[in-house]
Length: 78
Length: 120
Image (tube, rainbow over all chains, first blue to last red; front, top):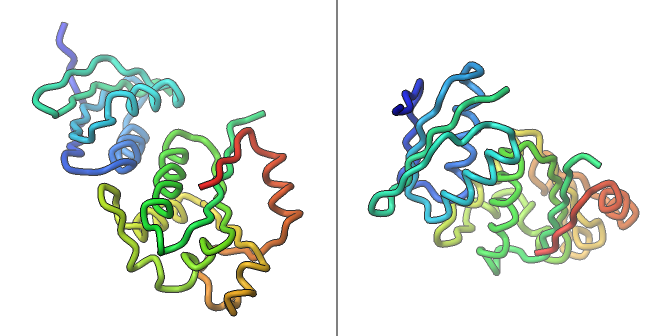
């Protein structure tokens, strides 16, 4: 079943660590259970978002990459 | 022990990339809910002089001043090595807000209270 996002954050063009910082702020503003769709072009995005999710406890529901653009769906868990 | 790291900077504006990487890491740590403290020794204390970071840019990274501002706004503090500050004829009023001038025992206390210490 496709994931439906509650908020979209476009971090295209931003360099590390700004995508993660903006993701944290965006997730902080969500309610528990809501989903953030985050778009990034930073080359380290996949391991970064994966590590961030593991560290903070928020759930990385899915991710995809297309032509250097990463799209993540993150569910606020707490 | 709760996650807590100390990042030690030892290079100043003469090496923008090496000065910027620890700030980038510190901001990532804050975003990851890891407590982080920045220490400045050797010529890294020059980064704390008012106005210096306005002119430090490392390719591929956000401007150093932006990272300093984000780190500080999230509650981050700066510890500056007292002899390194004095040898450069700097005083507290020359340094950016949030800077605490300290000596070796303070650094040791912070190192031993942290799970990881990295030197750049």
